[in-house]
Image (cartoon, rainbow over all chains, first blue to last red; front, side):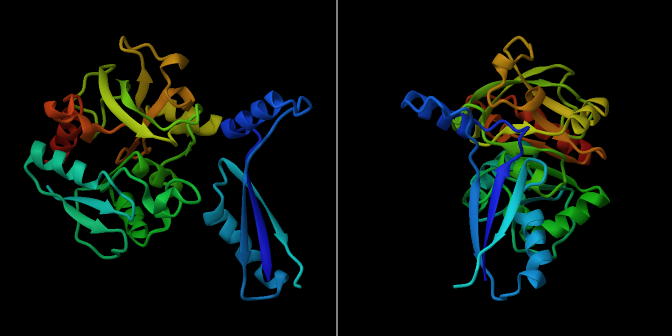
Amino acid sequence: MKIKIEVMLRDAILDPQGNTIKKSLNNLGFKNVKSVRQGKLIEIDMVSNSSTKEKKNIEKMCEDVLSNSLTEKYKIKFLKNK
Amino acid sequence: MKVAIVVFPGSNCDRDIAWAIKKISGYKPDYLWHKEKNFRNYDLIILPGGFSYGDYLRCGAIGSHSPIMNEIKKRSQKGTKIIGICNGFQILTESKLLPGSLLQNENLKFICKKIFLKVKNNNTFFSKKYKLNEIINVPIAHMEGRYYCSKKTLKELENNKQIIFQYCSNNGNIKDTDNPNGSTRNIAGIINLKGNVLGMMPHPERCSEELLGGENGINFFKSIFESIN
């Protein structure tokens, strides 16, 4: 089972990389870009195929390691098996 | 006095700080590999600067889960003095041994230069040899040094005098223009509530002999040695 975990800085946290990308896009003529936030995408392949069984485990990974709850938020997406 | 320096894969200030300690105190520190789980008692444990685990994921995040960290958490509760410098500070916040977090510098640059610090609390194990509000010149070298904490934590840090060092101008003004990385309240170094764990981004070991361009870091080490002995 594959899962994708999206980690983003919390809304209140300044994201200088996102701001720089936004300015660059505006300078390139993409004037409609109002704001940019940049995050991380982590793809994990689990041994188990049961999302219900693994949910708690994956949440624990996100809380303990993959994100810092003070500054970041995360979303878990379970990908369908091929 | 027994001092240990923890070595993570990617630490690169471990030898520098060992040199400074030996030179100033005469004691030779032990190196502890990050996989150690059982080790003798130490008066002081140092998490040095560097790039533990290549700064992958988040600075200090993987290092904070190294096997040695469980024992360091236990020792900190027993009162062992613990210092984290630069990457060591990042590991201490990721381990929740200190509040807050260290984010990418506001200007997105790796900043390597000497800055001015104001000693905001000299009533600690780590700063007693400095005068209150003394201005010292110390190098920084980091990409992720923007200290961030919640408003509640900030209030606690201020009320409990846990802010030890703040970035300032050469005459001691604490303004945004003297804040190299965008840290909340110009914070450069804090201690825990109990007073035995210190984290700081600047490198006192890099200014502890004239040959390196300054001696303002000597009193940092002297403070600790005097507290322990």
